Amino acid sequence: MRLVAEFTTEPFDVDENSPPAHATEALRVAEAAGLDCDFGPLGTQVSGEQELLLAALPKVLDAAFGGGASQVTLQVRRDA
Image (cartoon, rainbow, N blue to C red; front, top):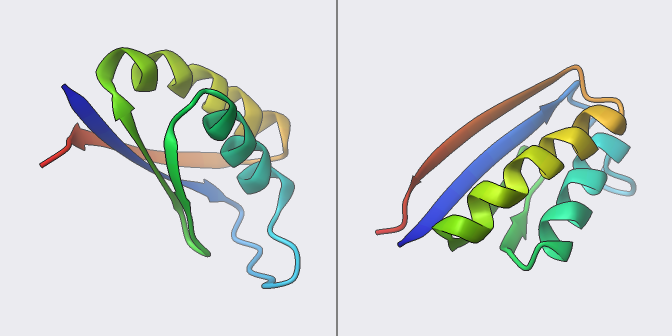
């Protein structure tokens, strides 16, 4: 089964020229895990097979907090 996860890292520091490290580090880890990624200004969506996505999420969270996130909001759902 494919899953989709959407996460937002905070604090919001919207600068089109350089996204905050907590957002880019989380994206880098998700990409390295082989997930399909869509990086946006207010959040990131990743998708992949259940086993792959669920195994990657703790690493994504570690990267976000390691990059300075104060909070991460996460939703996970089945891919329609």
